[in-house]
Image 1 (cartoon, rainbow, N blue to C red):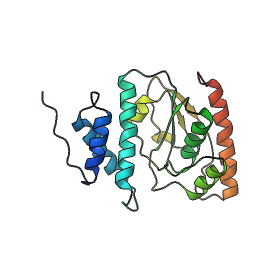
Image 2: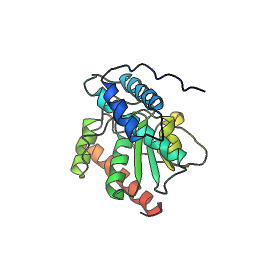
Image 3: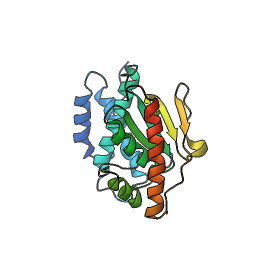
Image 4: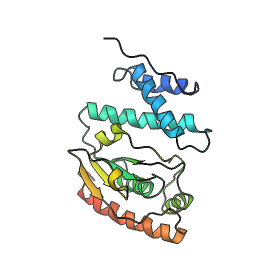
Length: 210
């Protein structure tokens, strides 16, 4: 049966990224699959974007993450623990947790974060306190929760997303009742960061190979 046709790209500037991603995943995913996922990533991000200046770049990065997660699932895993942090807006708690785990784990864990209702950008106070902790957030952006990333995760850490958080059989679920930094002072956000960092230390002690 012939593959379904690729969807029209919502922005023709995505074409270069589609070629780049298709080459990276040649032999695993068809160009049609890559283009379909890239177009979907763009449209999902466009729903909450205030400006479209960097939307093409961000869509390619989101599509790359989704393709890597899908490849991991289809290959039945690589043995490296994969941790997904989920909160409502992916602009505060889950961003801090993912950044801190990535820093502490030193490449021994694959880390993702997403939001059930993603915001347009990372909260500036969150970016500030992470920079103070030695984490650069220039590449961080709120991402929508997608099936590929959920299915690839070994551990899903929920952080205040309530009933909107996904439940997939076979995953270890943890819930961290951490305060929402939205609208909080920098001092309060620092305290939230330190609380999350303490949870990260505990989590690392349970992960194989870390």
